[in-house]
Length: 402
Image (cartoon, rainbow, N blue to C red; front, side):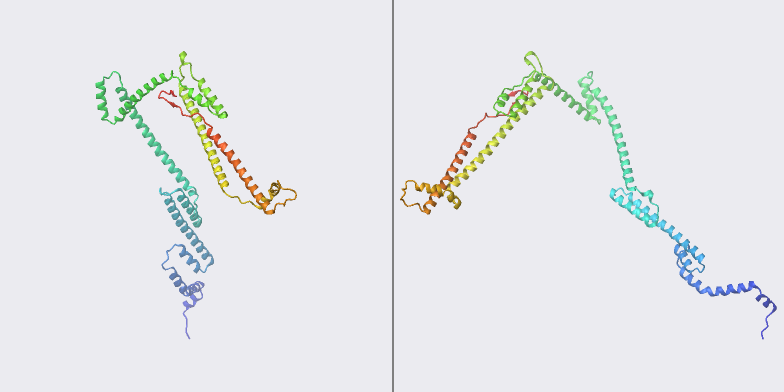
């Protein structure tokens, strides 16, 4: 029989020793589970969401499992936020491409909103980014244009100041022609050659202006001729147009100064009167053209109708039964003329032939009457004449030419 020492018996009877044996036995029992867990965690990144999710799934203690699961969710959410933020930043960087259109940037802005909803990232700062880019680009372009315009204005002002100085020297009446020529030759080598060309053009223009002023002096005392215009209006048929043109001509005539008494035209009045004369002349000519066109159209219509009538006269008509019946009574009466009471009455065939003859004769008479009326109309159009209308011409001085 085995015998145990006193110390061993005492140890076995102590609670702490028993707890240690329990823990040791428990550790031995959980060894396979721990090995399996270690195998599942092999290759995983410690601290990752998947790492903590595996720990939570294999944790026996519900409280610890819940804590590990919550930590896994937090890490996953943080990782998703980082990923979503990275994608959003990438889209925002793409939006800064100056080659994109406004529609392209709006599409990227919509993608940013979708990514924000997918990853739970606040994207309010990106709302309106497409429009902001357009506004900023417009502001930058306006600023650039303003700077460029200001620079051009400053350069133009400096150039103008320098050219004013050169022009003042060049046109100084105290400068001799020889000195002026030498001054121009020396300055033309500088970037002011165009200045002297402009001065020459101004001098040429001044000569033209002087000639025009002299011309105006002559025109201020020159008369205009209305006689031909009055005759042309008088030859027009009566109507509203003729009355209007007479009133316009009278108004233009009233603006003529009393040149015989030394009067002169007010500036622009003579040209205004000549312009009105031309307008009246054009109206008369256009009216004549319209009348000729209307006469030509009516003449063509009448000639077409005459050709149609002539064709009908050459064609044997087809007399229908109702037409024969309409002329039957007159035909019978015609056949009865000269017959005695004992004469044989006309046959139906004779009546039919006479009715056909009457119908044909009536049709021919009607066509001939129409033809005669159309010929009278045509003769009236051909004999309607008007004065030969001519447009007014003017001399260089604005004088009307008959």
